[in-house]
Image (cartoon, rainbow, N blue to C red; front, side, top):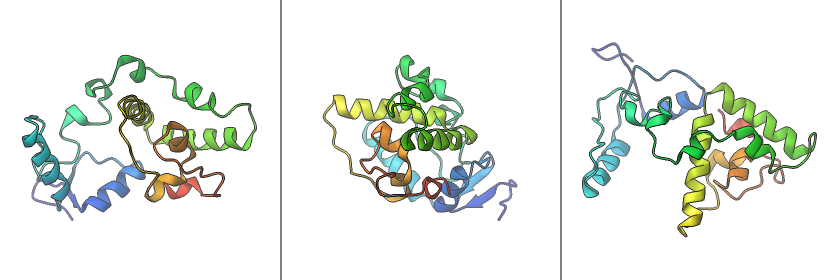
Length: 170
C-alpha cells in the first residue's frame, strides 16, 4: 500500500522480512509504531535526543542507518575488522564442516551488505562480556546461523543440531 508521499506502508514484521531479503527500504513507512514508541520512551528516560517520528520512512534517520556505519558508536578496530579472517580463524582448517558452513553463511551476509552489522555484533558481544552483562541462550531463527554462534550472539551450535542457516535469511 502507498501513502500520499508514495512511500510503501508496511507492518513491523514485513519490514524485518524486507531487510532479511536484502530489499531496499529507503521509501518504507511503518504502520505500527509500538517499537518506535518504546524506543522514544527510553530516549526520553535517558535524555537521548535520537528519537524517531512514527511516520518517518524506515531509514531516514541516517545517524543509525546500517549504510552509515561511520556514525555508529563502536571503536575503530571493530569498524575495520576483517570479518572473514576473524570468523574463519575460529573454525580451524579449510574444508571442515564448520569452515564450509561459515563460508556459505558469510557469502549470504556479504550479498546483503551486512558485514557492518556483523562487526557491530562482535563489538556488542565483547562489550557485554567485558561488562558482565548476561544475554539469552538464543531465540528465533537467529539460532540457525553458525556465524552468529561463532560471534557469541547465541549459544546454539546450529551444525550440531542440523539447523539450516537459510531459515535465518528468509
